[in-house]
Length: 195
Image 1 (spheres, helix red, strand yellow):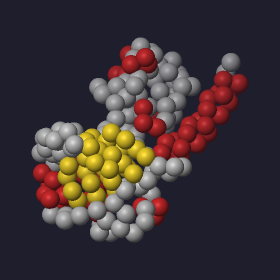
Image 2 (cartoon, rainbow, N blue to C red; image 1 turned 90 degrees about the vertical axis):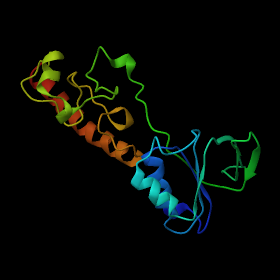
Image 3 (cartoon, rainbow, N blue to C red; image 1 turned 135 degrees about the horizontal axis):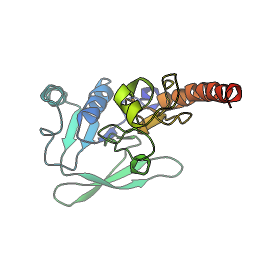
C-alpha cells in the first residue's frame, strides 16, 4: 500500500470483511489514524481469523461498521468525501480521502476453461503450478516444461490477478508482465529455429 501518500491522521476506509481487509486495517492503523472497516455482513467472525479479529478489537483506532456500504464517492479531481449507508438505513457523509477495496477476487476466466488449465477456483495455472497430470490433459506438445508464466497452451502467458498464485498487487502484475515479455521472445526464438 502507498502509505506515504496518506496524510498524517487522515481517516481511511477499508471495504471488506475477510483476512485481507483485516490485515490492511491493522497495517493502516499502525500510525494511529482512524480506520473504518465497512462490511456488508452482520459480523466478521465467519470471514476472518480469530487472531486477526482480536488484533482489530484491541486497536482503538479501528472502527468496524457492519451492515454498512458505500453509496457515494464525492470530490473534484480527487476523492474528498464518502457517503455510506449504515445498518439503520441512514446515509451519512464523511470527509475521507482514501478508500481501500479489499473485497476479494473472483477469476473471470470461465471463457478460458476449455483452452488453458485452471485451478479449482478458476485461476490460470502457469509454469511450475502446472503438474504433469495437467500437462498430459492439455496435451502439452513440447519437450520443455512451460516457462515461468506460461499457461498449458504453449506461447500463451498469464500475469496479474487472473493467474494462480498471484499476490494481488499492481506492482507485481506489472513486473510479471515484464518477465512474460522476456519469455515471449524466447518462444519466438524457438519458433524461428523450429518452424
